[in-house]
Structure formats: structure tokens, C-alpha cells
Length: 378
Image 1 (cartoon, rainbow, N blue to C red):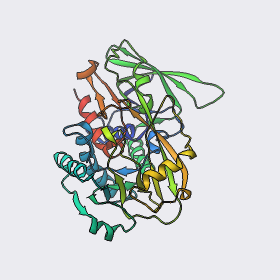
Image 2: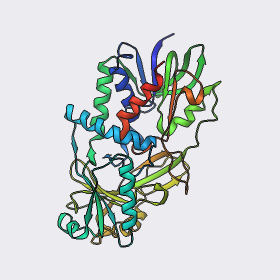
Image 3: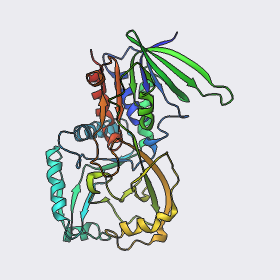
Image 4: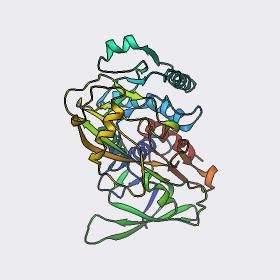
């Protein structure tokens, strides 16, 4: 039976970040690493359906994993992008307040400072008019370290490094079962390379990392003989995006005051690497993954956008794409932190499971990878 030192289930940005980190580390440099994904290629699900924003670490609760790993990950990510000439832009971001929301803006600034984000600048209404004449707001926070990224090229480079260092990537490979056998894991997979003939393939590995994103909880419950009481519930939260026709009205990314409990960051204005403006995402809890954008949302989007961009014409909005966040907090609940569970949580040596890897997981991906590596060290 084939055997690997490490198996990583899930080739989204987090799984690829972990594969990259292990492949360059002293402990794992000479070890065999298998990266599995049920899709036809890497990053086909959550990692390819987001705003592609490099976050600063502003909103998350003090001492949370999201705050810690976002702030650390942002620095690591910018260094990686520079070193590898991967496209990105430090566009900066404005979090804008309407009349009566200035106190909330101040509280956001104080929270950011507790998270060691110390570069936020208070912008008054007069200065806002000069830097963003199309923007309507009474005040704003300027985050100069927020940016945008070509996430596909970033993920492609992570995989390139991992494979160049000996890792093996197996797309169209679905993990059906994981069983602890002695000091190893027996992994049973279904190979879906040939649509007419599915094959079963079993192998052993010393360490297993569940980074399956939307499927992480389902995979965790396929682990024979392992306690699943620590596996959090999964809540699918859909976010739609609409593209904007015409010249971009803004130079910066524009964010309203976040939704209550930080379920989402509000329908914001972002720019992609080609300069195209898009608005979104909204938040809609759903029962099954669904990536159709409902064009009937156009007027609701326009109404939200008009609070900071009064000149918006609903006819300028076209359905673009949607994504589904793997949340571990339900509707009306306070936003949950990342859940990264190692042996101290579940008692199984060599096993790490990652749940709720929504934003800012892209920004934090390299810091998450270091965190996971540290969990695996004997």
C-alpha cells in the first residue's frame, strides 16, 4: 500500500498555503506530501469566489485567531507577492460613516489598534470630498495597508513551490473515509478522473490535515473511531456580487459600517486587478450551495450602495458571481473565530482540522500555514 508522510485534504488557498509551508520547512523538506481535492483543479470553490481583498485586520476581536493571523499573514503575504512578482495593488480602503455613525467608526479604530493595526487615519468630510468626490459620507477611516490580489496567480505559485519541492497534487480525488490505524491514518478515496469508471484508492499517511473548506465538517464525520463532539456546525452563507458598468467611481475600496455582529462587512465597493468595479457581497444563509446570482436583488443592492454613492443607477449593475462562506456561526449570532483543532482539542496525534475558514483566510493563509505546522510538531 502506498504511503505518504502528510495528506492535505483540500486545495483551496489555505490547503495550498499549508502545502507550501510544509514543503519549505526543515522538518518536512524531504518528506512526501499529498494534496487532494475533489474538484478538477485547485481553488475552484470558496477561494475563487471572494473579493480578493488583502485585509488589514481591523474588525476582529482582540486576541482572536482571525486578528492574530490576519495581521501576521498580511505582512507575510505582501512579502511573498513582492518576492514572486505576483500582481497586487495597495489600493487602500475607506470605511465610511454616515451621519450618526461616527462613534461606531471610532470604536472600529480603537479595536484595530488593539489588534496592532496602527496605520488607520481619520478622514474628515472635507478631505473625503477632495480624495473621493463621488463618495457621500461624514467621516471615514483610511486603511493604507488594505489591497487587492490576483488570487489565482497566488494559489498557482503556492502549488508550484509545493510541487517543485516534491509534493503531489491529486485533483478529482474525493476522500471517503479516514481511519486511525496504529500511528498512521488509512485514507480511502474515490478517484474521479474517468467519469465512466470511479476507482477506489487507499493509502496510509502519518499526518492528516482536513482543510476541505465547505466540506470540512462532512469529512470530519467520516473519520472512523474519532470523537466528533468538537466538530462545529456548518452554516452556509451566500454572498452575491454585481459588476458596475462604466468607469470606476472610486480610487479606494469603499466599505460601509459593518453589519451587526460582523456577519458581513456590508455591500462594499471593490476593484479587481483590471480596474473593474464590483459591489458585494450581501449575506444570505442557505441550505445548499447555490452560485446563481439573483438579478432581482439589483434594486436592493442599489439602495444599499446609494448610502455612500448617491449617483448609483441600478441599470449600471449586472449580476457577476457569488460565493458561499463556510461559517460556523448561524444567523443572528456573533461572528465566530477560525476553528483550528489539533491534538490538544481532539486527542488524535498527527491530525489537524480547520473549520470556518472564511475571510480573512486568504490574507491569513501563510500565517495559518505556520500555525498548522507548529501544531504538528512533536
